[in-house]
Image (cartoon, protein in one colour):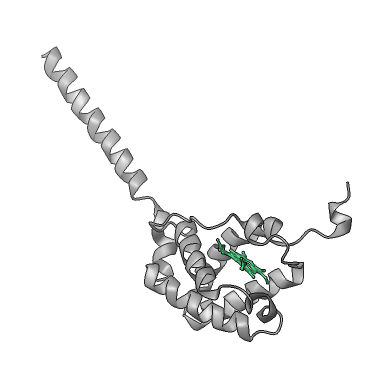
Length: 153
Ligand code: HEM
C-alpha cells in the first residue's frame, strides 16, 4: 500500500514538473516575432525601412555609402532574435558596427521615426511597435557617437 502511494506521489510529481516545463517552453517568447509576420514580415519591413532611410534627408547620407543589402539582412536577423524568433544574430556588435559613423542623438531619433513609419505602413499594431522599440532603445548608448564633452572624465 505504501509502495502504491509512493508510486502515485512520484507520478503526480513528474506530471507537475512536466506541466511546469511545458509552461516554460510555451512562454510568450515568440509572440512579438509572430506579430511582425515572422521572417517574411521582417524581410518586407526591412526592405521598406531601407527605402525610407535612403529617402529621408536625415538618415539618407548615412546609409547611401553602406552595403544596404547586408545592413538589411543583419537587421532582419537581429530583430528576429530580439523578438523571440529562431534566429541568432551573428553580425557586428552595435559599438563596432557604428564606430566612427558620427551618429548624433538626433540621427538616432530620426531612424526610430522612420522605423515607426515602416511599421505603420506594414500595419504592425501600435503596442507591438512599442515593444520592439523598447528592445531597441537601450542600444542608443552603443550607437550614438560620444561627444567630446561626454568622453571627458
Ligand atoms: C536601434 C537602432 C539601430 C540598430 C538596431 C542598428 C543595427 C545595425 C546593424 C545590425 C548593422 C549591420 C552590422 C553588420 O554589418 O554586421 C548596422 C549597420 C549600420 N548602421 Fe545601424 N543600427 C541602428 C541605428 C543606426 C543609426 C541611428 C544610424 C545612422 C543614422 C545607423 C547607421 C548604420 C550604418 C551606416 C551601418 C553600416 C555600417 C557599415 O557600412 O559597415 N544605424 N546597424
